[in-house]
Length: 417
Image 1 (cartoon, rainbow, N blue to C red):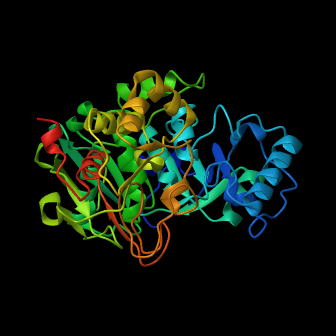
Image 2: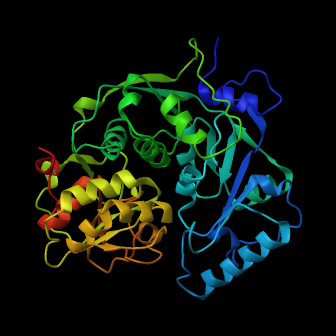
């Protein structure tokens, strides 16, 4: 009886030759990522020892640049920590700034076959690189940084077999909304993505799926490896890559086929993403005050390209604020070179620096009472992006851009015919 990709990765990094659902495993941690929230005075407990500074990454992203005195103090604490232990992989405000999960992609920190930890809930984003990545609590992060290990209870795995190709104007965000709307809660489960449909998905599209898998409540989300992903990582690191494929006789809780060519633009209604997706036509005409494209899930270069394509030569509707946040400064600079930023800003959009910002309601786009926002970010929970009376619809970057032009939720497909 074979193992799934996640089971094999956990086994490789533990002292167990075989890992099964229900097992408790202690694994080595190859990469431990601390971000600015870890250094906030309310959560920070001074770390006196670091197991291996070369396995630690420090990123300022949630409130970057600092949005208030408490976040500025957290940044000071983080800088002192980096200096004390000689941590070289440090992403301060400036040239290599960005959201931690996107930084992992930009700099090749996610090594296939390894274990990666961070205390942000969307850490499963790194699973796109065929590794075991999970968000854990601050005490677990402290333990991982000081001891170089952690533990997990192994869950069962659902396999999603991707087939076909997405139509123009339909994106990986729509695939996620289909999964969330059709299959709902995946609590205690792992998700493994694979199949022939991978060939038509960029690494950025795949990363949207693993990032948004956090909203399915998965334990781990990962992709089976292929040359596209391996070449991507190899171009960004000199570390040896050790990818892991699932066994042919791996045992899954379920195998589900997803026909990418049958996916259509979807929208999640406010306050929840699970079992809450509707076709765009069902909510078209819903007036909006703000449109947001960004976050670790949808601040990729692909997403900015889509926004620029929809917006070029158009104007954002009067009374609508369009905010676009690249996930890293690398993405921002490349979007500048390619003309995406010009197209977005000439249409009336505002492009911000790389930060979590509006996604978590921390800065750069907080919603007021009674406002309505359509967002291509990670969550649409009540109060997530500001006032609890605000309504947040979730959709793809194409749908968000089309809606910003229309002034109400709109179908993006007409811009791709």
